[in-house]
Amino acid sequence: MSGSSVYRRARAVVASAAALAAAAVGLWTGLGEGSAHAAGAVPSPDHVIVVVFENHAYSQVIGSSSAPYINSLKSAGANLTQSYAETHPSQPNYFALFSGSTQGITDDSCYTPGFSSAPNLASELIAAGRSWASYNETLPSQGSTTCSSGNYARKHNPWFGFGNVPTSSAKTFAQFPTDYSTLPQLSFVVPNLCSDMHDCSVSTGDTWLKNNLGAYATWAKTHNSLLVVTFDEDNRLSGNRIPTVFYGQPVTPGSSSATTYNHYDLLRTLEDTQGLSTHAGNAASAKDITGIWAS
Image 1 (tube, helix red, strand yellow):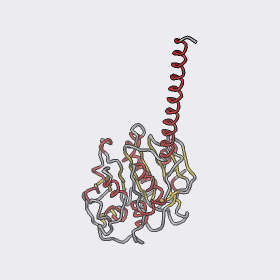
Image 2 (tube, one colour):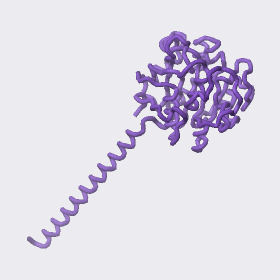
Image 3 (cartoon, helix red, strand yellow):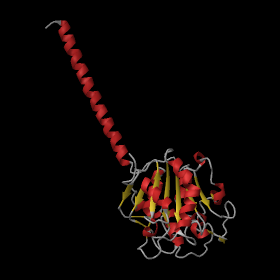
Image 4 (tube, one colour):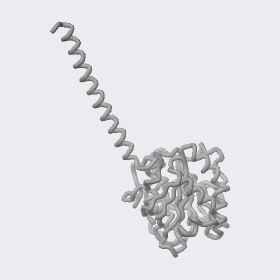
């Protein structure tokens, strides 16, 4: 064999080995990427808004002609058909959703502001350098810890129970921004006692949602953002099964899940959309909401 033939064969062997190595690296990298993607059970939206309504069972809202807007969100978003609250009455459910525990609250009576230092969604976000706020309809003024005022009720705003959440992060709904890109990365919106269906009709609450957050929902669809609509509890007649609907770009339109979820699972999911390394209270052993997310 000539020297040039030996050289060409050596080059071919080297090239073949390099190709195999590159393929192996590519395969390994691809597997790594796939594993990382599969491990991410929930998306990472730029903005998340959670709206909490009051005291209605799943069947009173989902499929009801009194709630055309919520049902439009369900049809173009995602519906949890087996979503459940934790207890009765209202106030302990809000604490459960916000902090993974009822924090010893068993009724709707006024608590001492800042009575707890337990970890919660807001304290975790703040510790992680992420932005948080609540927007509370008819709150007398930003940061006001008053127990009640007209149609405003603090029992629906659990953040005031925690000393590790600045009261200034509780804003009035009048402070809700018109430029949605300036929203915090995660926020709660709490309608007042009429708008949340507690004292007024399902139709009233549905119209309030459309008029006040419909534009955000439309914006969220094209801006990697999420709207979550849920309820604190049912009407005490349906095993505490409540409506919970997701809408926005990260959601598969028309999807649903029949997996049983509760407030702790929703809290866990919210924490994980923010990439938090901690989980408050019972959220630590809860599960992420899955099966509804766009790929």
